[in-house]
Image (spheres, rainbow, N blue to C red):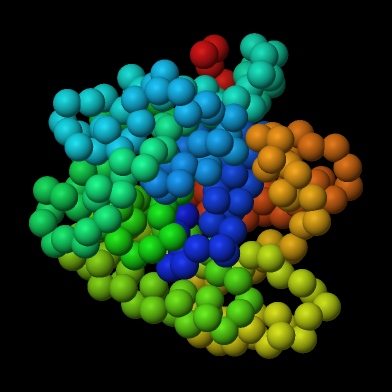
Length: 273
């Protein structure tokens, strides 16, 4: 099972948008996927069509006593799967609901018991080929919990001065953390979001990032998409949204997922929820 954490040092770079785009690509490709929303704002939960009604146990509650919960008992089907026909035509997409309770674990610690809370929850989970974790927009204890449980970390950046500098600092912190606390972590990469091809500043920053990050920078960049807010506001997968703009965005996320997804197992087809 491949576990990818989607992280950023700062908010506003589109980390949740990347998570939703990758979830949509996995859903469309028939990859059995679990999305865990670790961001206290829980925007990914909303974007996946899950109500914040307390009908399922949230991730913050489970992290408090990870040995007392089986994460598979608390997943809910994404609201993207409106009908049984949708579920059969695409991949399984389940969600662990986010909540503000994860903010209780923001304090950075070196205690392995704290760092391994999420890894403990995921231990023994075998129903999915892919797990996507939307991390908080900070290098705090919650993000480090995600890294410790992950096989891959994807950093999200924008082609701007502060984002580039922040991503470079995050890579340094991640490399140090990986050696001591994240033995499962195999690869780290950065994807550049909201790129405007005509912008001279963006061209300069992209060139700068290629020099700084080398092969860790994905070749595929995410262009700025005019109707992305509308798609997210409707809590709908980009792969099912009409129009050429959405189709182009969907192909871009397909490429990003293809560059990240390296499990050797055969993707599980959708199961009836």
